[in-house]
Image (cartoon, rainbow, N blue to C red):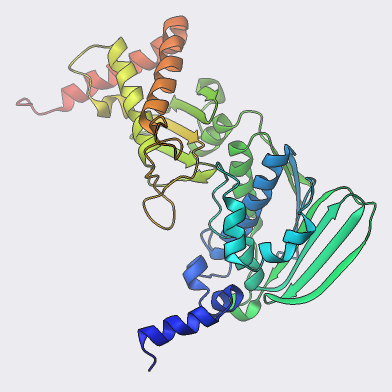
Length: 371
């Protein structure tokens, strides 16, 4: 049996591609066959989408075309500047090179699977770059180099990537349309500047987080309050449901367990309600009963509580020492926008405050007499 030091030496002698194929679960968790929406094949799909989105954001482009062939092979095409030819191979084979690339994108989308991993776990992987009338096409099989072709081209500038996952690792897998479509709907809401087509079907959003909250809470669109600013967007409403449903996102990634941004959103909302209803009889549970809300922020180099990135741990908006705290940033935005709205719009003010007061009175009647 090999010792720990021998295993470490073995890993050190391997390339990134070799180690990914040897220990795929270390990089993508449970592989799965696509029958569940949390299977790794969807994380890989999203990882590539996030990488392309970051490229487009830097170049101010706004379109991605996606095709999924026979529920099996993924093809993604953007219309940006095209990957520089000298970067193509290293970007999909070397973690260190890809990490250096990420340093140039301070507010990148949060995909937890990079192209190096996708290349290693694919039976076939192709990356094409179209720039200035020339195309370069590089192909791999199971992460190993196969061919490299350069030729003149009249194709519009941009990047094309296709991959077919290795059935030796994933078995008879399948990309289920409902999972991909749900992902792209939410992704377009969180990146409302972007238009995505999937096998000809168009995904884009004019209403951003408002549309996402409406689809998840089944609330009436006209009842949703929606505010959008630089690096922050919030939406909320009240529904007929009991309890609270809140959704939070950081750099386009859903933080299912919340974090510092969601805590600040909830706290600022309570502060505003208490300003308009200065009553000791109003409990936080009264304020959030039937509440449906969502917050999305963009943070430079976010820090998460654990590897799966479901809870934001960052306390500041950037890595600079004098950066504003996430709490102050969110509280200031929410209080300013919401206080202004409640002062100017009597319909919204009455809708929110009267509901909170009614719930407080109802819950008070249900409390034990000795409370």
